[in-house]
Image (cartoon, rainbow, N blue to C red):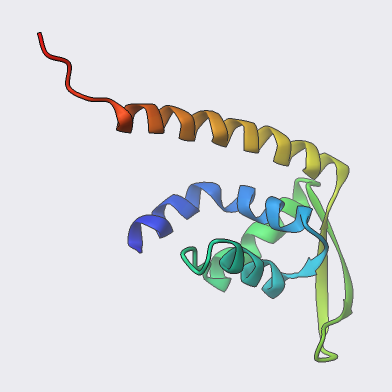
Length: 113
């Protein structure tokens, strides 16, 4: 599980952007969506999530507005901006290239001389 946590530090922005591409939601909802989509393999601490949401909003990739959650509590709801959608596409492409290259290395077999 620690390895998944280490990997997550480099991919948290990508995961948040992907979660928000599926629809607007409040911060805790983003955390739950990522956990759900990963079948609970990825567990994101709230202490990592909220600074990332602030960073993404500051970059203009997401925007937020205040609303009421399902239990009538005041909450910030986040959604992807057009700029964020373009960033998601670029990051997905980069991730797919990287994971494909890692897969090639892992599939390599010893070559006899």
